[in-house]
Amino acid sequence: MLVVQELNQFYGGSHTLRSVSMTAERGQCTALLGRNGVGKTTLLKCLMGVLPVASGSVHFEGQDITRKSSYERSRMGIAYVPQGREIFARLTVLENLQMGMANKPAREARSIRPDIYELFPVLKDMLQRRGGDLSGGQQQQLAIARALVADPRMIIFDEPTEGIQPSIIKDIERVIALLRSRGDIAILLCEQYFDFARALADRFVVLSRGEVVASGSADRMDGEDVRKHLAV
Image (cartoon, rainbow, N blue to C red; front, side, top):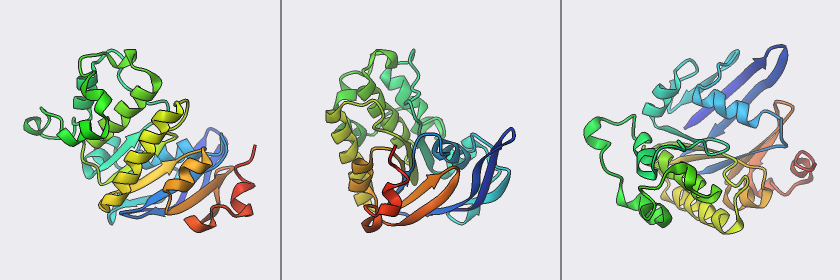
């Protein structure tokens, strides 16, 4: 579903992504692994059109989207759950969810699908509460729900377990596993929590200093060549 070829990106004189190539398949979870500062979030922002690329290409369902804007990628079916959640703190939970449907025609963006509340029951009881008043774990659930209401064909998670209590991490793992089991969506999971990623991933890609240093099927994730690039 997603094909990235020889992607390069720079911050000033710093070469932050170095000829990165990878794929993400429908019905699978691809884990993007690596220490802090190796370029994971930069890569995700390039995939979403938030950052421009210097060279290389990004294709989604056979279409070249390398120069398309973020909203065009969203309309094509790519959703993004950013690091740090980035919900709208002054908007209510309901308004945050409605913002997630901004790419839909107005007649379709009025009501939230019931299955969203089945995935995240806590949100249904907090629809009129401001997003900024929620706990970190509740905000993360809201950020994921906001992405899902757009009915994406691919969803990108940027470290969804960061700063989240263990009970909520289990809920997030359950939701991602359910999305994968549906078989109709591609999942790209950027994660530092190795055990969380290993429990969900079908394939993995490891970044180090802006380049891919290891990749393969999930049964190779426990290998020494992977772990040495994750250890602090």
